[in-house]
Image 1 (cartoon, each protein chain N blue to C red):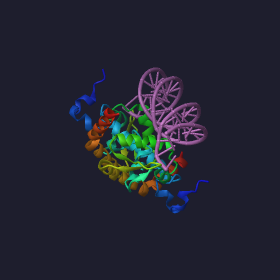
Image 2 (cartoon, rainbow over the protein chains, first blue to last red):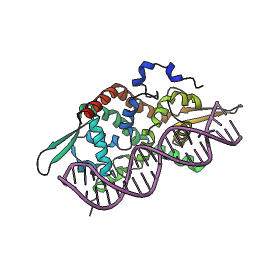
Image 3 (tube, chains in turn green, blue, orange, yellow):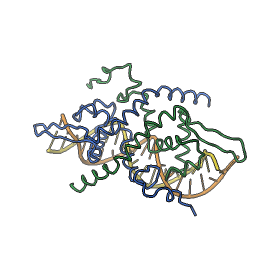
Image 4 (cartoon, helix red, strand yellow):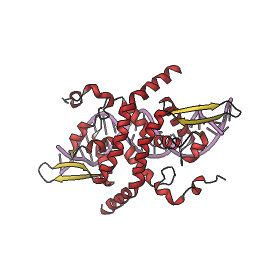
Length: 131
Length: 131
DNA sequence: CAGTATCCCGGTCGATACTG
DNA sequence: CAGTATCGACCGGGATACTG
């Protein structure tokens, strides 16, 4: 019988314990840590942008994926979509306050990658040539 | 002709510009932002741990995925694997210095989720009931 | 204990084409 | 311009079984 280690560990804190398998925040974490979401969020932190502007700023992102991410992030309350009723309509996306608050740690992470990326790549190369 | 926007933008900085499609650091970024790697890294930051200990601490991670992640992270120089030649062998995993340095921004991100996770979930619910 | 091997499914992604 | 629709390829990840 598998003794349930988790049940013994702070059952009330499920909501903020990502290590717990039932933690609902895992879905939130996945949302902001995927392949593209961090790039969208950090780019948008520079200021409001229109759809194709955003696409051009994020190398190789497809329109499909971009529109999916934007819809999800809007649903999450991290991004706000604004339509100006002109012809053709101008749509722009901007971060909400919550969106800006998450951009900060994401930028830290991107900075880490910029600072240590080469070291990682070097470690990989070293490791591979040994094998 | 598609004018290449990227080419005009700091071609020398490719290595630290994650927005550029050819940036080699994207692979590094993907590594540390995946579904499981952040959890492994942050948990390991608490101290060296053995395989099953780690598995038990990270809810619902499968052994397959855990072993894959550990192998990758070891290759990246973020995790160090130590074998004590006893019978049966004791294997333990620990963060390297670089590993600790990345755990820091990852913890920030997890803290953000702990702080704002409920708000996101609420925003989703609100958005959904409107639709 | 500490993993690896295998199988397979579901979701993600990219490319392309199309709409208002 | 601002997307959506569709389709196929790919891959991460779960379940299960097995090895040293």
